[in-house]
Length: 171
View 1 (tube, rainbow, N blue to C red):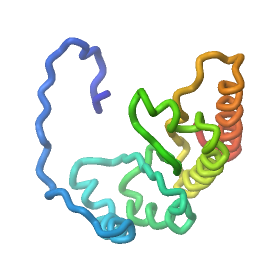
View 2: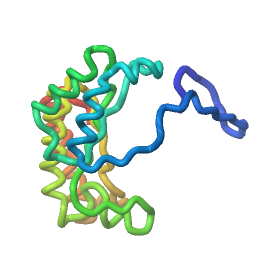
View 3: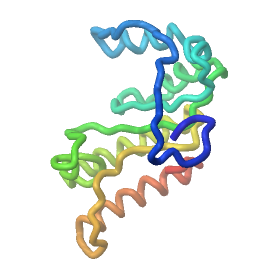
């Protein structure tokens, strides 16, 4: 997917160029210091890059608070629109095709209820941000709808989607 492009690029050779150098990579000693740096720069850096829209992502449910939503909105200062909130969850996550099916999303029974609660809190956070679209990785959904595994994941997704619908959020 490319901004401002329609058409089929399959089989085409593309050349990518850096738009401009921003800064060297920086490691922050704590999450609080990273947050402070982001809030200090606000929307101006994004506007300077020609961006008018961002997706917010977070895997730390403790940050899904009204206060933090207000901080994000204030930092963006009405200059940047939030297109969606990509809601993460706690617990193990291995991003590959061998261990991923046992660790990601709502599929692992051991983490399902906890992650459902976190995703519903994420929907609250999206609502406080004024965002109408929330995404996540629900996991590698079992293929056979007649299994208990499939029914469990389906029920969890349905519960979260219903909660989001009540808040006018697409999930």
